[in-house]
Structure formats: C-alpha cells, structure tokens
Image 1 (tube, rainbow, N blue to C red):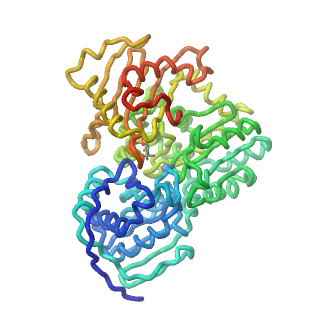
Image 2 (image 1 turned 60 degrees about the horizontal axis):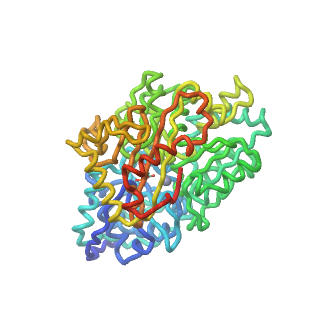
Length: 559
Ligand code: G6P
Ligand code: ZN
C-alpha cells in the first residue's frame, strides 16, 4: 500500500463559483483556468460538515462530456489531499445522474460529485459543470450550495495528494495509504434497480405478442447510450435498431443534448415518417426524458400526471403505495387533478429537483415531475429519464392486456376524458441581455408585489386576473423559505401565466414564459396546443412587455 505526500498549494479565489439550480455550470475554458476546478472541489469538500470530507466516501462520475477525464483526475488528487477515505468512480468517468444517485444510496456514500452540464452542449467551446449531491442521493440543498460559494470566495489553499494518474478504464479497486479508488461498472446497479421497479416480464411479453410495435429511443449522444443498450436491447429484447445516437460523445456530436421537440427533431421526424409507435429521448446526463408517439407529443406535465394515474400497474408502487404527488410551480396542474381524484397529498415546489428530496425523505412523496422534461419517483433522489421511458412502456403493456392496440395517443385521450385537459406550453428566450431581462422581472414584481391589489381583477382579452404573486415556497419539512421563485398570474378560469429567469444557463439570461389553460370541452381535446394557447400568450406578452424589455420578437425554443 503506497503512501503519498499531501501538498498545500496556495490559491486565490474566483468570485464566480456560485452554484446555480444544478451546480456550477460554465464554459469549459473557465474550468480550464489554473486552479479553477481545484478551488471549486476544495470549496465543496470544505463545505461538507456531517460528515466532513476527511474519512468520507464519495461517488464520482458524469455524462462524459469534454474535460470530464481531466476533472476526475483533479478530483482524485484533491480528495486524497483532503483525506477522503474512498472514491467510487464510474468506469471511464461515466455515470448518468440517476445512476450516480442510486450508487450514493445503495453504497451509503456521504455524497457525490457529478460532472455534467446536463442538456447544455459540450466540447471545448461549450459547457462543463460540477454538481455536488448529498448522502440521500439528491442535489445539495441551498444551505450547502451557499456554503460552497462562501468557501470559494475565501479560499486560500488547496490540498493536493500526490497520487499517480488513475486508470479509469479498468474496473477494480486501487488502494493507497488511507485512500481507496474503486472503479465500478456504470450500468450494472442501475439495471438491477429498474428491474426491481418495473414489470420487465410484462413488457417483454407485450413486445413478443406485438412484433410490429416499433420503439425508437434517442440518446442524443449523451450518457444514456450504454444504459439504453442494456435495458432496451439486452433486457427487454428490442432490436438494436430501436436505439439511435447511443454512442456517448464528448461534444454530443455537436448537438444540443436536450430531449424536446426542437433538439430531438431527428427522433420526431423518424417517428412520423416511419410510423414508429413509441418514441423517446433523454438528455446529456440521462435525467430528462421526452415521450413522443406518432402524432402525439406527451407534454412533460401530462406525462407525470399519467404515470401517477396508472401507478397501480407498476410493481414498485404496488409495494410502496403512492404516498403523495408533486410538481414544480410552473408545471401544469394536470397532476393536481390526479391527486384530488385519488385523495393524495399534492405539493407545489419551486423549479429544481432538489426541492422534492425533503418530501421524499419524509415519506410524503412518491411521484413527481417538472415541465422541463423531468419525471421521477422516490426510487432515487434525481429525476430519471430511462425510468420514465420504462414507466410508459409498463403502462402501455398493461393497458394492452385489456385493450389490445392501445397506444400513446389513446392513453392521452383517455386521460383527458377522465380529468380534462391542461394545455401547456413554454416559450424560451435564450441568451437575452441580462439587464433587459432583470428590468422585465422588476416591472412584473412591481405589478404583482404586495399592496398592488389593483392588479387583481383587471381584465386582458377574455382573461380576468384572480391572483398574482412572486412565488415563495415554505418547505413543510425543514421550514426553509425560498423567495422570488417566479411571477405567477392566475386567471378566474384557472388559466395561468408564469414568468421566471432560468437558473441553469451559462451565458446571458434566459427568460422562460409558461402558459397553461384548463379545458373540459371534449371537442377541444384534440386541438393543437399552440392554437389553444394563442390568446393567453398574447396576454402574457402584453403584461410582461417582454418584447419591449428584451428586444426579442420570437422565442428561441417552444416546448
Ligand atoms: C435542471 C434541474 C431541474 C430544473 C431545470 C430547469 O434540469 O435539474 O430541476 O427544472 O433545470 O431549470 P431552469 O432554471 O433553467 O428553468
Ligand atoms: Zn439533465
């Protein structure tokens, strides 16, 4: 067992290491600056309190994007320098975000360092990211990320262990004096987990009985490649042609690894052209998902509501029961209606998966989702792209037992006939001038702020405002308060407009405008979303003066 020397290297702070919604995300070039990555890892380890970094076990892995391998070698040396006891690292540095969350929980690690900028493009000119997860497997809560930021601003030295470069490609354990590095298979534990959750036999027998049922999964050259190969091809027996773009690439093949109608267009086109029954995609780090059937895009807000409505066909929920449901504030209220019908508790939390963790740990939440293509459950503490895809396959396979030929579109329509339809869309205005975006938010805060009751009752077109605020969340478990989480304008007919600035961009500001309209008019259930929402979008643009403040006529992305 070899001993190694620890050096205290003097450093100076970078003022910009404040983690956002999902960790620190910056251009690769920023992380490549001398000591930048070292500083952030040191600040992260300094922020660990129970337990401290010394003697702890941490999981390390990511989506394999450009700069990951260099960052992992830095993490290994800084962890050794801080007397971390053990690192569990995915082979070649690969662990999807859900797989990392699972390993943290399963191996009872004290936390994890995830190397990903999720759905942001990768490569030398694009983004890298570092995210810290805590021992429940979920993203660090705000008190921890704030502490990391404080440490980063005051950092004076980084402790670096003189360990040799570690070969990440060989599974096995490498031991030094007081420090162990274990390289693990990236997929193995995750595959076991999913097989415990879902009815793989039912899904397999559905495929066997319906040999013409075509599935296409698109990994967008992100981390899910090896996971989809294992789950869809090896375990569920689908042909290899059922997965595309499933070789992870450090720059995602030059694409934007975000599963939505804009960036997963090659999937959408193939589903439509080749009459594929079931299309799905996941993002760079494997926690987002999109479900797309021929002529039937499943909006993420509907997706989570439908999974909740059909939870009884999923073995995991048969065992645990459904304890409660939740969504992020901008997500449509479709899931609220399911909760109401089933007599379940429903929670509305700010944007960010970390807000679900406390509720899950307290045993009050089983299924939750966000409009931003995140769906998941309390099986781990991250959203889970492949979990959502298999959940849908499980639901379709079960529905076909009673109703042969029942597809994605049928499931959607059946849901609308039971619950009504929540039309929902999001307009993104990416990389707008930060100043203009902030002025717009100030203008909106002024409109809805306390004491501005004259705004309520005002009518715009066919819509009359019934309430308006800047969303504030009181966590019922730890009583923490999160203020200024987005402007909400709610109308008397239940329609809503939400406007907030993204917390995940790395350049300029991204304005997100969300609109939702509820309908119980059966003749509208098959209407086009954009047409149904047009009058509300016009009102949103009028109230926010978005075009005036940002200079943007059109959104960059519509989901
Ligand atoms: C990440 C987080 C999500 C969040 C999403 C959008 O994917 O994990 O929880 O909903 O970002 O965040 P943004 O602040 O960009 O709207
Ligand atoms: Zn992601």
